[in-house]
Image 1 (cartoon, rainbow, N blue to C red):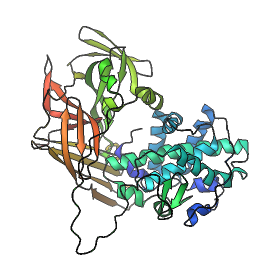
Image 2 (image 1 turned 180 degrees about the vertical axis):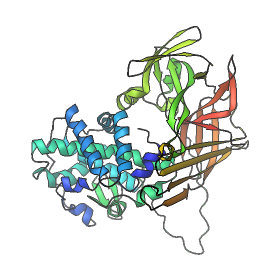
Image 3 (image 1 turned 90 degrees about the horizontal axis):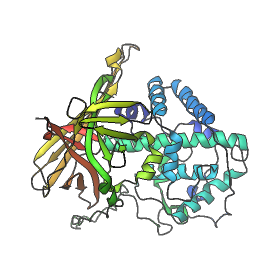
Image 4 (image 1 turned 60 degrees about the horizontal axis):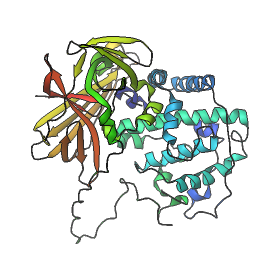
Length: 471
């Protein structure tokens, strides 16, 4: 789920909503969270099935938007717009892929949300073990299973759908804040309802569940954001971490099935809410499938899981000469002629080309000032790639409210924390390695110009976003 900068800005102080604790009846925190050591293992939590429906999910979104509108109309409008474009139920089910948790069990839904809250509060990226999920379910669901709303089938379904929606918004806000370099602000603004972030940062997730730090050896490594012990004044500074080779691609076979890599023009929202022309990368497969790729390199994408979670990213295509017919999930075909204004070839780095000496910048944003409103949001991101294989990344976000409608103006601005390390190009894959030795792979492509098409290195796709040369 991709949230734009405008939605991120208005969600920062609002996720998760306070109503969750009220709907849950405000349960006391289990002893495993309140104290240091866990009690004896509790009995296995009972199954808590519920029946969902399209009508219930629509009412869940409508209720959330109504409640939000009372305190933040802009946020309410953005959530309503995003939820009209994305199926939160399908996205939530994607969270559970590869786990024993079931999207039709209220206890499992609550377990997933609690674990997600812990991961967000600690900015953790390692997936939990099956044993850890079972343990959290025992800790958190057993105390609630015989109390409303969990004990009543009708209220259980409504409660579970609210938790699913809030989990999706919580996850989306977290990921978007990380992309925009706003994670500290996002974490600082998290609600203290249900389990306060401070409590979640004081525990680790182990095969015995959520355990106070220092009580047991964690089943996982501590999150990357955990504070390191202070070294003695005489201690030498730690040596830089040795680079870790990235994990082997999980789906390298994806590249064998492609017809080509392209990009197309689409409308987007720019600074102040202005409608702008954006470009989005598109993978065409030989079986007639099209896929709007996001950030991950294609060899790391589980296409079946991606289709279930993000069906709108997939479509169909046919070709007659230079004419391409693209059909999305809405069933409406669009005709494009290659290199003629709205549909273009994208190019990989050349064979053997591992580094480049270029800078790329992306300016995006949101707001309402372009439509006569008060709010303007601007987001800047920049990559500097150097010939020696090092890179730097920076950026900023700013938002202003003119106060024309309220009489009270405001402005905020933040710079993202500088990032850097080493990088390497390999055709359509960009691998970034940070100072801690961790690596990640992103989709990469150059734009094109002319007919016949030739690479345009002033334009590059890094992940699913288009960047241009700022000079």
